[in-house]
Amino acid sequence: VIFLTLFFFFLCIIGITQALDVNQPFSVFSQTGQKAVVRCNHSIVSYNSMYWYLQRSNGAPELLIYGYDKAEPKGRFSMEFDRAGRVTELHISDTQLEDAVMYYCAVQPTVVKSMNISVQKHRGAVHPKTMTRKMQKRNSSMWPKLS
Image (cartoon, rainbow, N blue to C red; front, side, top):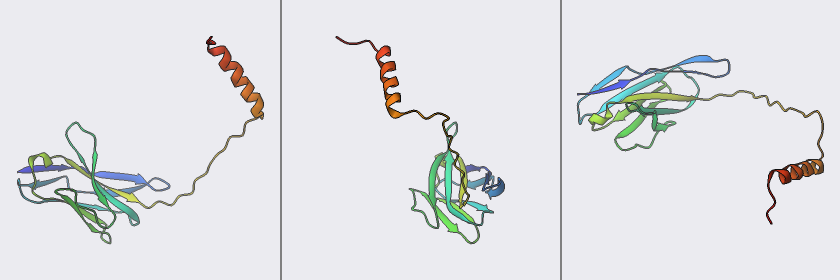
């Protein structure tokens, strides 16, 4: 029996840090050679893509598969979508012992937000020729002359 451990993944995004839930089961059980399905649902009404990551023991999360409303299978891993129901499933065919890792689902929300750009104005203007002369003078004193 393969024990697939899963983790809850919460997102705090969109403008005024609104908490959005992304939920998946804590664990899924499967026998070696069988199919395992991990379901993920979320509360995000407007979203772009769904992502599945895996994390091996003592390793960093790795992007496994992603898509908008369909995804190209990656080996034994595939995704199914229900956009209206805000659900995606990770399908693992022919489960192996090495599939007993952490799986995370994530959602890329559609965010529309205005952005302010601040530009700092220097108090004194420096003429480009003056700056070039200063740089040449400083550089010539820093480096020995080669004969």
